[in-house]
Image 1 (cartoon, rainbow, N blue to C red):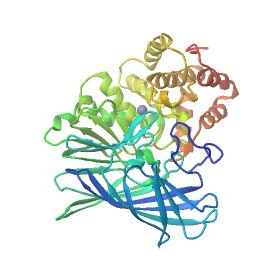
Image 2: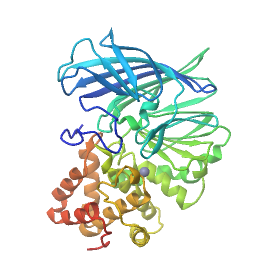
Image 3: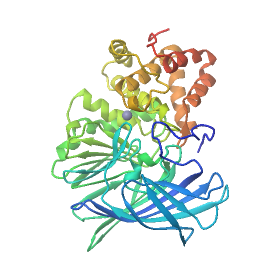
Image 4: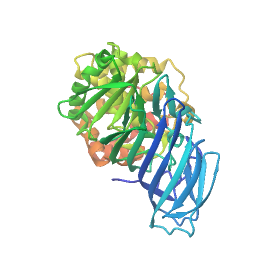
Length: 437
Ligand SMILES: [Zn+2]
């Protein structure tokens, strides 16, 4: 795992007051109970951590849920919980480099957490739950060190009513039916950022497919047709993306289709969530199914260190849509690039792609300009070099944390220093550069 410690040690202004840089959580063990009818969540989170600094207070992020008990290394610890910060006093200071364990017992009615870009996190559906935490919603359901640069492994155990299906990240290790409900245990052994941790609960059925990588489509029970349409093409997308981007980074891939309509699809590690409104046979749905799959390489395995580098996720996933168009025998990426350059050139140019600001973080212009940068790079260096860069990127930084400078450095290494001017124009300047120099 590659870690950049020199960047992002300050508070991330895109998600103010989230995360702490004095320690890294290495594993989350969550044991949760959930009542769908009353939206009541209760449980216990065990965090294993390493001190990166001398610590006399451990600060975790937790929104609204009430904490009943905290211990550090097995001893009860004093704590305060104000404004989504759980501040814990260990009995004695923890020295740099030491490992420690925090156990938090908590309960309440989880709600999406507000942030500069809107609400995110645990949310009730008409009949079930969706957890979509990007970028700041993880504290809505478990106490965490909520910064994307702190990746950890997870065990997520959750007991829910037996007539519901539970999906979480990683591999389903066990499923035990009891009188109080069914307990599902999922384990994610690939390092994961907090915002990518998820639980999906609903009355779902499953369809398994996938020739090289296991692909599961989870659909509203009794509506198997919902798993057709663009979802039936995921196996072909997987084959194309493995060839273009390198090996699929996780054990399996799951697409969850909720019975509710959703504004946008949402990515999590090893899975993505779509509203039933995306189960349609048109290009707009299909490009988004390809987009979310591409996030497994760009965003979930290779993850930004701070949110200002969002183009490293969204620009790449958007470009993957155009690549899928090309691969599936539709228009070439060049066609999409020209079309979207023309459209963008009609819109306001009032942000820097390399630091668009929290309000524009998920603005479509950021997505498209990021994809256009990649197309401009491909045009300049040629297909062989371009795809070599993409595969080197996903291999060198697999399951790691990155910055834009890491991508520029890698590109310079493989394509020569002359590409530097292209990045300046697309990332730092406000005006829209020409598509070909
Ligand atoms: Zn995206």
